[in-house]
Length: 296
Length: 319
Image 1 (cartoon, one colour):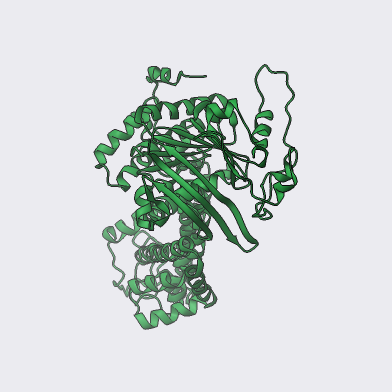
Image 2: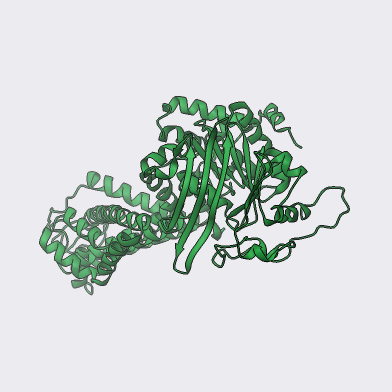
């Protein structure tokens, strides 16, 4: 019979290094070089989107008829467009709009997705059945078309566009969350928490959702560029944010008209757009690897 | 002395698509304050289900009948709200697998505090203090530093200590331990059992210990209940149980338990535990494997034979 656990108390001088959950995630995330570069690039984009409009000597409404179609030069780093507007400034404003729409739509999507997914998964039975059939219907409807309708009905402001994109793209998130909840729900620590008197709400908020946060974050990081693409798609066909407010989709569609004579007008916006989407995708990849210890 | 917990003719049946599974089929026992009761049996004998019925932690397709009197009140008549006030407050439970019974995303200390906060028994600061005290009490060194760590930074034995701290922090009258040592290695097993014992003596908590390990049961308990096929076959104080085992199944269990330094060959019980779906209502559940089977064993329910106030066996052999 061992009774020496008390002795252990006498040697409690050793240091215990604090390692939070995030430091461990970061440790795994760091191993993916592309993801780290992408993360820094995304941070850079966010900084540019905030600071850029403040320091730029131009505004997106400023036309200069003495400087039409200029190729990149010292005054206009990325040249000017057919109205003599500074392309760099337009791209920065477009970036700001793209980020707002991307993150905003992502938030709306996560909120609805978690709400519906968690309720369906946790309560199960008929509730689950009805909610999931609704999700199926949302899946079946072509989301681009639905977006068009919503934008036409709600109007064409930045906020309504992100709302429309969020409202049409939460179905996948709801399904994902439901699956996670179903898995987590039957783990032993949930039963242990119940045995110690936890209420349903406590279990969902403190146990189920935190333990599903990995896949949700990963899905979100892939959905943000999705929302940006959707926004560009809308502006491409002229249903995005109201001009003269620039949007990447709008800039690309405008540039495509002058593609042969002034290729810089499409190269810069399309390049910025591609790089941004790529960065989010690589970041999502890294995040997925970090949350999934099996990839180690 | 009054019973703290009295289980009377408890029946737990699962209504599944494949038919009714009679996991627990009419069991009765009593537990006094400050005592330890062990429920012994092989896998599928209904021992876990019987205590989950007490906590009302079963899925909705389970039907529980009978009476579970906790301080004289029938827990089965309680609504969800009332039972939640009991769970983790007056009756706590620890589970078999400490590796998966803690929330991996919440710090250890936070988790230990939570039962107190859920039941509004203490303010955050008091709860924190108490949790650190509890961690020390269950033998976790550097409790203050450990408080802010996550479950994955703890070993299996340490986690089981944390589970015990969590279960005991609100000072329940009854602690249910469902195979608390099964997934731990032997030396840690002994430590954990000793810890439960020590805390129990200090606080006067009653314990129900579920185990399939007879050695563990005889080591720590005052009273032993042997279950087979959803029913009790024998119940006795530990002393009576060791001195005078009566039921053929109990014999079988004792004979198949290795004893150190003994050269005796182990004799396993022939056959397999019954499939609960195929179990008949009538007759002794052990009859098919019993070496002393009589014709009536399969046709009539075994009688309850009281050898003393505390020793009861359900078997036709002793009529």
